[in-house]
Image (cartoon, rainbow, N blue to C red; front, side):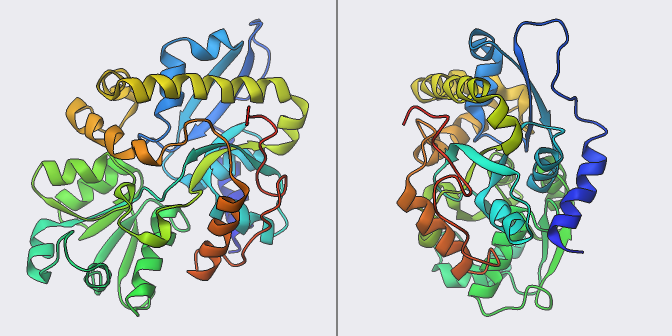
Length: 339
């Protein structure tokens, strides 16, 4: 099945469960945001909790999904107006003629995926985070590797690691779609898989509880090619954004305001957003936020050269079928940010 067709198939399902934006008697503009639960949208959760969205005249409904692919489907279909997704999704969609989404707010400036391996498997293979990176890639040979869903970032970048080791992702490992972070964590703990990668916190939980070993920490810049990278942002349904520019600007302003809170006190933020995460250990969440801080955008702005480099790199390492158009307004825009 072609990627666009798969997204549209997902949209037909996702559209049944996401609330549509509309008038319910409130003077505030309603926005539905589709998001994969993780720590890097922390500013969004803070803005939800501390009333920043309301003060900006917005009523924001956050719908948590199991994979980034689900968020793409929701935004393409219009079931959600905004979703946090990757540039790889936009490039892939554009190659198939779907140009209905545009990045409006930069979120993460580095690939933050953390690869965690069963502790015993890592010990048997003689690898740790201090091992040379090629050895960590090679250690994936023959393993059962968990991903959220086919084509999601957890899948695409894992395949990149395998190819870097000279391995065939289809032949030299078993890639298993498991679902969200909680499901992946449980699958690792119960020996259903040998390793998985996802943005924190769940990989950190596996290590803290003694059954997992972090081999690659993307937030710390362990993979040089992915350390200065326009990884993830908030993309809007392009047609909706054109018709509601003030609402998009209000959304991005609220994120910037909330980001100041996140940077000022990671511990307080961890407590505030704990029930939005797949992990309620505040200590783990604090570690996660502190680890992610260098990767989080402080102002939501995109840098043209960083986008260009990212698109080229994604194509060169086999993440996307083409390099993508780096020009502003093709896949991204600063129109709605104070840049």
